[in-house]
Length: 306
Ligand SMILES: [Zn+2]
Image (cartoon, rainbow, N blue to C red; front, side):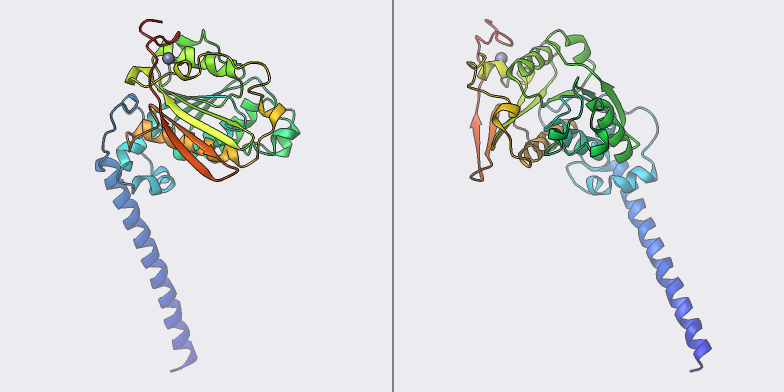
């Protein structure tokens, strides 16, 4: 066979392969489109009530971006729409807030507000993976918002450069879900009071040294609030902050990612969540425990007799 004819055949063969790839990709997108409209989304009892869809249909870019969610039976197109319409408040843009914010923005949670009054420092970079060296000295909420806008332009991020207090009930009523990654007893109790007052579920995580824990605090669905289980402020020195006691760098990545996972399930209605359960991870020995916890009828925050 003459060399020119062989070259022509190779040329057509390459074009044929490219055409097949394009057709295959279009086929995948159209299957995802069908799932995005009609995919099943099994309901979880007590899933957060996300408002009905607003705005445009899911674009081809979003179908491609969220393809791994849309093929999941438990999320599918309807679940992705719920993520897109969800309004979430992340309290604390530190070690736990960093993975929470990154994973929720990447997952397509449509409206994310991040509250924190701190600035990025060099000692944060050991575990607060949302920041880089160029962010040192910047307000955390603005640096985090820039990173999230780069990660996913479909997500609306609102920086709130202040702390959340127990008086923020009206603010919290504007959200479907709150995630708290603050690192002091007082700030966690304040967030718990505001969420209980607003009737909004709270995904709470905490870490110290090698150990972390999380729960979904939700008295509206008969799960305890934080104060049911931890009513009293620990004596000085008994619950030192991470700055005093230290914390291993990867631990907030694990607990923060679990918090983001609980949020995704609460919003989409997939599976079940740690409501009425306290998950404890001992990172030093690689052990996990799940403890059943109950509401305290005499709780000063959510109790019927409180
Ligand atoms: Zn309570």
